[in-house]
Image 1: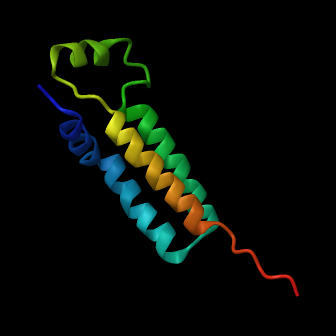
Image 2: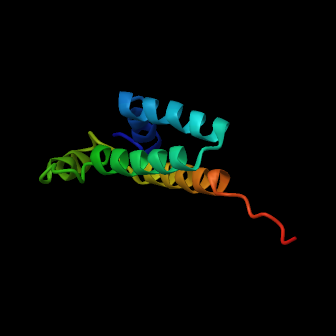
Length: 98
């Protein structure tokens, strides 16, 4: 039986997510707005493709019932938290009124 934590670790070991972690670190490090937008779009696409909603035609649901695939809810929550953090950190700074 695969738990949500097992599924989270499995999904975070995919090459696409590892690349996104690196791109997220670069976007945050250099605090680029468009880099942040690109990273958020990448996380959205990765979540769509990796959680089984990208055309699995019920195979992922059968795997979950049999215990071979865990729930992707924790992975989705972490991806959402990363996206919110990137948006807030790379947002343009408000300049004080002069």
